[in-house]
Image 1 (tube, rainbow, N blue to C red):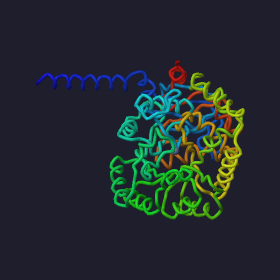
Image 2: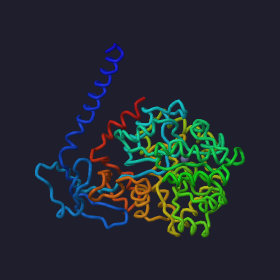
Image 3: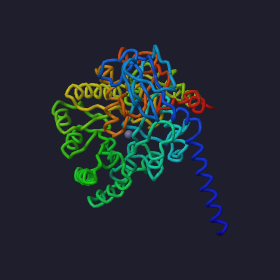
Length: 452
Ligand SMILES: [Zn+2]
């Protein structure tokens, strides 16, 4: 065997040993022994009655029983975790995010590395998010690799590269090259077949002219893409801005909207068509309301747990420098339109799923999701409806084995100091997070993310 071959073989064996060490290390105890979590108030699903004095049995990362403590039999040698006084709810699932571009205070394509993404997946997990779908800004193989490897932290789901008219995808320059630029029906179908080979969780399209500054994806092109995607067994989600485009996309067969419409209120006719054609929406109120809603997000102690002052101080200085940081009339009007649209869609029975456009500039993983819960409640959803929209619904849409705390599901849950069904802001009071049956080391994540 030549020298290079030997080196390659040694490297391969080294990697194998490292992988074995990683999978049989500290986590093995938690994984091999059954664990029972006892005494908490259990929200197995947002819309089911709370189980007082509950027990959850977890074996090899899966929930094998959950219910009143008296109904759950613990095997001998089980590890017992006393959670009296706490409330347990399913982990959150974010159906509209972007990963890899923000690092510290910078926002750039050069930040898009495995380390940046894994840090963000851990930041998501810190706030109780068990999975995130990233919408069209993942060029290359990296997101698909991380999806398949499932490192500790939130699970990653991805659309890979999204689709737009040439140079008309993501609104910010740093992300723009990640999208395919499509000009003909033939290209539309060819590119969809190309990305379909990687089995994206959805296909993402942008239908927006960015206030007249770029070319909008034409109805003929998005019809070709939706048709081709559906032939490949893949659903299509759309970035949309204008009411007229939303109406036509529903008729063209789109499966979901990643924004509420922003030029006008969504009307009863559109709501009825979305309901009839089973088109879901992620509201993104948290991001849209950043400059509008008080108290100001950058002053929130919950955010400072994972984002250092060196990142937040310039943001605060910038905001207060511009006329005292008060919201513009335009921003307020645009936000109010979306709040009323969400209330109307919700009333009409349209499927609502947690999604925030998290990961665009200064929209921080996990924290943004916790705030989105409050924004959905402020738009008129009950805490129970908000919890369903943030857990079971997006989990089902992403075909994930999470979103409820029932036998057979992955053990992904949040332990809270107070019950979010009483007040949704109690979702901020996170005591512990468990993903795939393992407790997250929140102190270590916090230390790493805020290291100067
Ligand atoms: Zn987005």
